[in-house]
Length: 505
Image 1: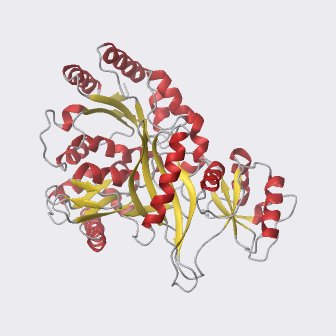
Image 2: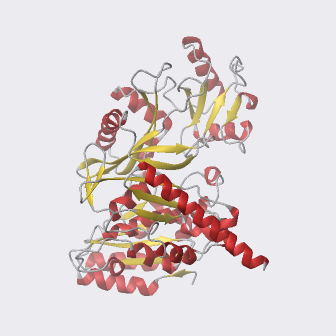
Image 3: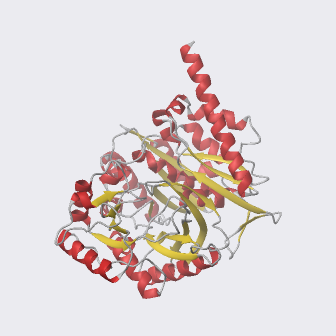
């Protein structure tokens, strides 16, 4: 048997049977991006570990029980540590009693959903559990996930469960082409460009020629329609500001992907496979940096809910590195207004679950005018901002206001920063257990539930093999968030030096 947790499933079934008021579901937080996308970045195939926010949410939702599936296995001390961070409550059942962790000893570079499908005994055990509890009057809510896909749909069919995110047949609503159509139809500002996903390079070249003849800009982007996150599916068009793209063809030399490891030829193969749109590059005057705000929401049976606004931290290759909550107040009302309109439209079209809208914001050339805001894309799935937001919601006792702020019980405001990019090859010698012990010994870093401040690491299973770790830092100000993040990095560097010293000695 290459999966573990059979005894936990037995105990889980008993707990749910004995507590008829419990809701319950199964979680498979598999990213489900295209394989070509998953090859970029460090430890991407382990990214399902970010889904532990859902386990942590049991601390706040005392009527919820959860079966969490992970591969590779999450070390036992990690889950115990996360549950220890939760504010003490009056739960009839402690979070760990309402939780079953299923671990698959599989480190292959394939999606978690595939690893589950490759375990027929596990599928049988889960399907039988679903049937028994449904027959006993405890029907499951369904299967929660990071992103929908045909593979996730097949997994739901195997387990006879409904999918709790948007159905895979509707995921095109989150593609670049349909997102731009929605922005246009709702009157949400967005860059000039095309509104259909073309796969033929002749069609794309013709569209590019017509757009450039009509608009003065010499800076244009080509975006793969679906299957890619961050900037791995985006390229510049043209070899320089005055270049002309040959018509009737787009050639590899005219396509410059933002990801250096992707060639123009490879990018065009992805275009032929998935389609692409063309979009005018918009931004502030050269030398100024734009803001990259986003709005995270959740669409349930009763409609759409805003979960939070964030300023995303975007690298040179347009890859997501982290975020800061809340988004700057100068443009927060505008992005909230636009995002709510998009969420409502998506709900009307049948979308469900997590959703995000990404924006670009900048001032005009003189820096004196109001911020200009452009909607860039819709993410019809969980996003990089989901796990820090849900972590803060699980741990901080307080109020999430309509203005997009988080107020602790004492009325003071809480901010959080999150980073997915704290890695260093030297960190690979640090075990999760060592990091936990070091944090517990440092009250200035260890999360304090009574004050609602501190550090909460994530990406636990990428630490030892890759030296990569992430963290959500919650504090009373943006400045203090930055200080705590710096102190965490200093701790990691010191630990790695100590380990290297012991090895060399």
